[in-house]
Image (cartoon, rainbow, N blue to C red; front, side, top):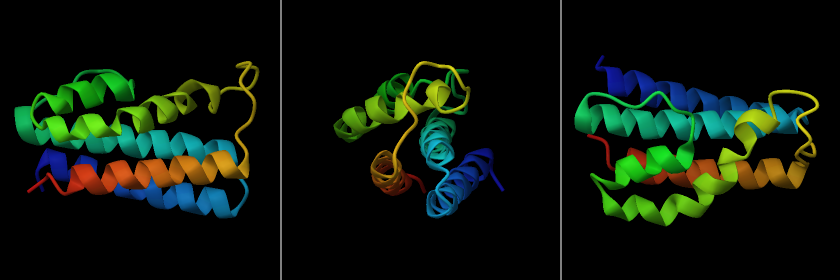
Length: 124
């Protein structure tokens, strides 16, 4: 299996786990996993196109790099901005950010699913 395929599988697993976390009312975890799924699908795309990816968790930055190969992904920028907020805020208590609600988690899942679908369609 090629490396980008491994990243794609991990992205799929994170999104599936996000749905499980959501159904068990672990909304912060669901949001974090949506961010992680998005990060991994972007890195899968970058690996396929360039053979490497940067060591960053910033979705907007990753998307911008993906857009260098496929400009249509720029339409996902707002989704990435929203999901970006869940990287640190959902992982550590006392971050100052409010805990995500069920609505936040459902929105994060929908956004991550959209990104996953659109970028996966660009992969071989």
